[in-house]
Amino acid sequence: MLIVAAIKNFATPISIKQFNKDTVNTEKLLLFGETGSGKTKFYIDILRHQHNIGVKPEDVLMCIILPDRPTGVTKLYGLIPSEYAENDRIKIFPVNDYEDTIRATASAHNLLMDHFNKTGKFGYAVFELLENYWVFSQDYFCRQAYGQTLGEYFAQMQSILTVSYTHLTLPTN
Image (tube, rainbow, N blue to C red; front, top):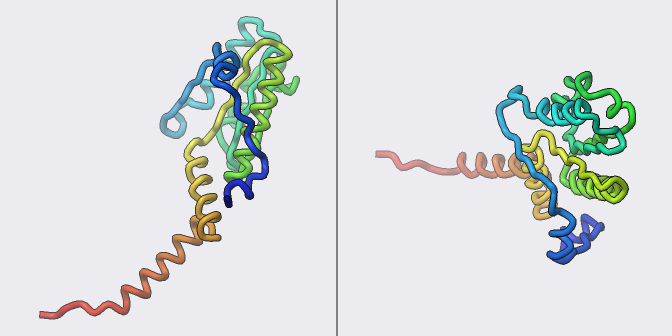
């Protein structure tokens, strides 16, 4: 009940038949690697490839959900084809927590569906810094279950354990 009350935006289910129709030609990619291995550059290279083969700006849409910290997106901005960057074909959704992520994902989905309905072309949803979404969801759960952030919860548990440990008497020989 807490989760439903906190989100306030309900998902609308669709049939498997409609889901199949809506997603039949989509591609899903999961890129992972160490810092600096080229994950962000890879999807910028997708944009560059589309530019090189003549894809018009109005046929391109990329939505990037981005936890609020500097990443390769800002460092590689100059590599994005200017027609796409200047014509608002790349949308950045800054997120700081679980709720932001849910709203950003829903907003990106709506933009991408509108784009598809207008152009018949699929766009891209990119989730930068994937590890942050795990932390966001754990923090959200802690706030719902315990009324504290994940950090506050662990600090409280450490304090309790420290106090409990100091009262222990160890057997002596």
